[in-house]
Length: 239
Length: 259
Image (tube, rainbow over the protein chains, first blue to last red):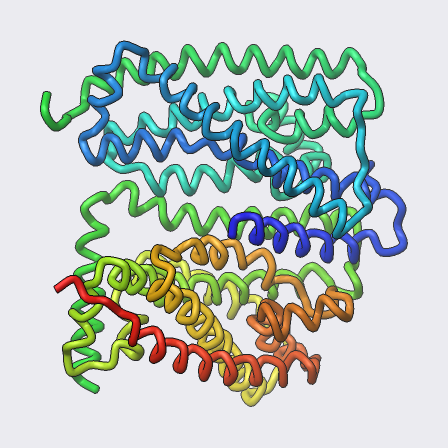
């Protein structure tokens, strides 16, 4: 069903952008093939920008199961990250194989670039950790609100928009783009996909990856701080 | 009829009280859906900053498609989403006879079993935006009446479609993934029918009725109703309703109660 939904949404995007491009060759630096490849990668990588860790923490807090994580001989955050990577990796491989083949057959107008692929894979991995950190902080809110399911839903849509899942960030007005430079969200999708779509490796790519790493360190530390602060208000079953 | 109304009010009150258990989170439901509308409209605005007209459509016109699409989404979120999920769970747990043994018609009661009151506010706000935006249009009362009828028709199509999907639970068990299917629909139903090429248009009218959801309601307000879309909407609605009814009756024969 999930694959069918993605095919349908991709079809909708194809129809819309086909009309938008009309007779035009390029819109905002994107060719039609470029933008369809962008949306294909958004669909494949959407799990990366959509970390489930916020929901996991929210449910565990609401049901009083969070102590199950706290009593394990691992740090809760590391455990959840490993769990997340395990879950996403499997989905990602399946999606990559199924979608690439099916979309290639259906639409046959996608651009492929092997030069920047290895670096974009590294950037995608960093994006996964970055997204995990942001949603982990959101999940910690449930220690106070006792349920942050809809807080996560609400933020998810905003984060997806700011990460370029709805429309590439180059379409945003200049002022928005400048503000987004100082936020971590564009590093979830727009940057990894942007790296893949570039024709050659440049120093700009390494600069973007460096910023990603800096954001990971900052948010990881911030997450630890918020966790240690919020966990004091935790009430659990059986402890 | 009064017993149905009393039950509807009771269910709404119960649901409202249940949601109040987590007040802060409940507030974010409004923010969640509002963020969906805002980001959709902003995305469209950003595209229109580059291109003045898309296939002859202005920003205001496509904005109307988004607003009516959201009204459709909120109405199914209020009446159908949770209610049908509840029916699916009841079938799987074998507790559907709680309704079947009562002197009520479950098919009529379904939309009111688990009404999602949170979306009522969003529906009303979106309706206000719709009314504000409509002042720039020049339409007759008859057009408004027909537009509402087509909107109700879209609701009926969705009801029948969901009904067919949950009926599958009688045989295969735990078939609830179609909800995600419908939650992703707003992006698709908002696309004008004229954007779709020939074959795809036929598929999305008669096989997967996406085009017939809100297109007729908006097109009639602009006086541009496509006959294929209008007749398609009516045909699909009637056909799906009959199929859903027959399918449900056949499905009930395979129902196994827990007690």
